Length: 132
Image (tube, rainbow, N blue to C red; front, top):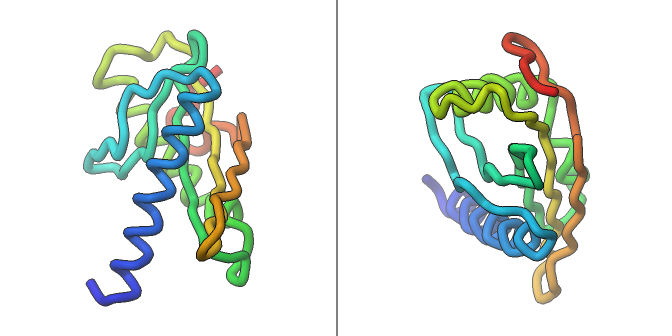
């Protein structure tokens, strides 16, 4: 990985840690971080009451390339849906209500992170729409 790639990864990891702190402050219980499978990675899996929440975290240092939420494209939504379904199946939790949230973080150099939490950011899409 080149230098720019490492810097993006460091910013992304830093953003995920900030998102976990934020979600805990909001009363969420974090179940998993960076849950990887052959289908893809789920950044954060958390409980909000009795609802399992799959949280996609997008961190940017500016909006020059667009708002972080814009990176959660329909293709990404489909992949997240498949990964979430696999996560639920593997833990026999298909009966639980679930949703997808996005935590968008803008972390400009020398400033505190700006955190925007979008609940129910998108519906389950594509194959396996088993979410309520």
